[in-house]
Amino acid sequence: MPNNDPLKPNESALLREMNELQQELCNRANEHCAGTEDDSALWVCRLFPGVDFKDWEELTSKNPLEEWLTLPLDGSAVPNVRLVQRNLAKLSYETRHDPLTNLANRRAFDRMLDVEIERSHRNRTPLSLALLDLDDFKKVNDSMGHPTGDLVLSEIGAILSKAVRRYDLAARFGGEEFALVLPGTGLVKAKRVLERILLAVRSATFTSDEGNEFSVTISAGLTCYKGTRDMSVKKIVGTADEALYAAKDAGKDRVEVVRLPEMDSVPRESLVQANEKQFLFGK
Amino acid sequence: MNNDNSTLSLSILSGKGGVGKTNIVLNLGYALIEAGYSSMLMDCDLGLANLDVLLGLSPERNLQDLLQSDMSPSEVAVPIEEGLDILPATSGVPELVEMDEDMQDVLFGKLLTLAGQYDFLMLDLGAGINHTAMAFASITQLRLVVVTPEPTSLTDGYATIKVLNTQHGINDFLLLVNQVSSAKEAQQTHERLAAACKNFLGVELRNLGHIRQDSNVLESVRRQTPFMKFAPDCNAAKDIRSIARKLVRYRSDNIERIAGRHILKEFPV
Image (cartoon, rainbow over the protein chains, first blue to last red):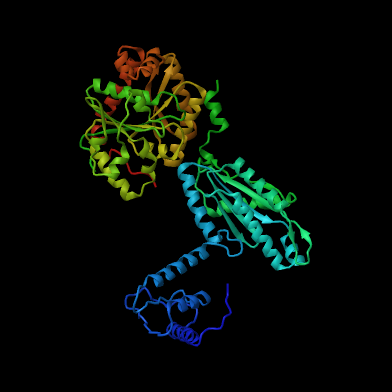
């Protein structure tokens, strides 16, 4: 949480100097210096008497200084290294999660789906994918305002997180669209999970800033990969998207399924045709 | 990789399961010993380690161990009789087809060094039209398709030939008709299938022979003993002997040609 306490004079001096230095060295303010992994890269050391670790910790919590490493001249460097590690963990979480809903983001989703497709193909286990989209969400934003809209999104995020098992993945796909990856789950089970989610969304009530109560619904498109043929992330997402469109077309607040073709690993021309069968069994 | 011993490689496949493929492979091995020839059977029947079951074996090692250690192939092979060894491959086979080329080379190098010590290398392939079975069928010198006179078996056998022909460009096949009531029924089955192959695929299907229905076969399976040993004079045993003789003749007629070819070709890309 941003803290608006005024900086101590030496802290603001330090901050100003670091920013200037970085700008100077990198030429552009918010970009990493190129070639820092090069052994010949310059180490810039500056002693700052009067700034202790606690001050530094506070400074980094309010300013984007994650790429700086401080070391004490005396005493243990462990707290400083821990701070870097904590920042790393935080940044790594942020690259994989959506800040509003705390669900996985698109990047994490793409990576996991790719891995799960491969696992499914290898083990011939089913893999279900659902895309969900809030119905008429634009109306919510327009009439209740964006902060209320954000509240709805974050509540949907909570419902989705609760509905899935540890090895499933719930992701915010963008805007008001969400995705569920359910490894080892076939159509029947996946559909049950989705019906539960739809019910939970339908039953949730929200209050606008003006104090009006309202509720929302969500539509879901579902598809399932059985692992029998080669599959791409694009194809499986496209198929789930097709199912989502079908759910919207059929009147929203429902689950629709589009099946993936599984048999085309055997090309059509290699199937035994009727005339060939006649030849085999004809009199 | 040369083939100094003129090892003849043969894959045995069928469209439909339960046509007696594995039992034929095993007893063919015994018939070849009788005729004075050695063979190695490679169990590629995916998921169903039938060769083990027919013999009541439970091998400790399989093909995959060859990759993971500096083990020699002869340590993995299970001796059944003098001149008849089994290479239990079951769990390593699908990986083998999808393995990267360097690994495949290592494994094939080891495998072929071993196989080269035998007169025959027989690959018992799984039933059905799957990628692995098709890939293996296309790398052996000969392919033996096993069918029974049942219509479903006939159709599946035809489909197998069709896929190998249209997808892998293979146009030579041998046919074995199992569980026939008479030589006439076997002949009719071959004629029908051969005519369809010729008419629609332009593929020649040569008849290697047939095996008559025989109650001794079922009994021998129950006892986990090959029928060649359990009832060496039964009709099925006589038929297997005649098939073994044809294979031996094919090998001696073509011995120079076989020596000039690899035991197994490379997997198709």
